[in-house]
Image (cartoon, rainbow, N blue to C red; front, side, top):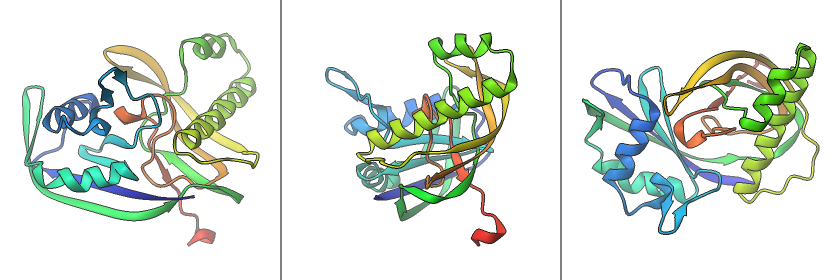
Length: 223
């Protein structure tokens, strides 16, 4: 399936140090008429794969829009002059928006990806199961199955039907992360899967807050 995507890069006068939640909150408040930006609707929240995702990587804030989310980013980009994040104000010195049609579909060959931001894999239930496991091979299989589930959930949210078995191999490292001032366990590293994931899409929990951002690793044979 082909999806329209847009990546809006906001170049600021200095690196952004605030968490993604501050960026998400500011943009959502600046443009309250666009529910895709803040995921609030009249009777609650939008509970689906986010069509607008916020990222801060190496101090650079940017946003990813998918289908109607891509259209929203193009409409609001001209109105973003500065970022007011907590007690800090950042001047947006320049903006860049990259549009492309991206393929999101199972493949016969394996593709390699790296997490640019920590993967938020564990919910309360599977966190307890993970912590009870002593064997690293058991943990690895457990995480691989969660990763497959995350990809299938993403596909469901994007209206993509997957009739092919997904196979995942991973090299992951545990790391401490924080969300809403609460400590959690996240994972960094790389994985391979027979599935095309567009660059900067997020997988796992809390992707609208920047977690689980992936980028394809281009091997020599793929260039």
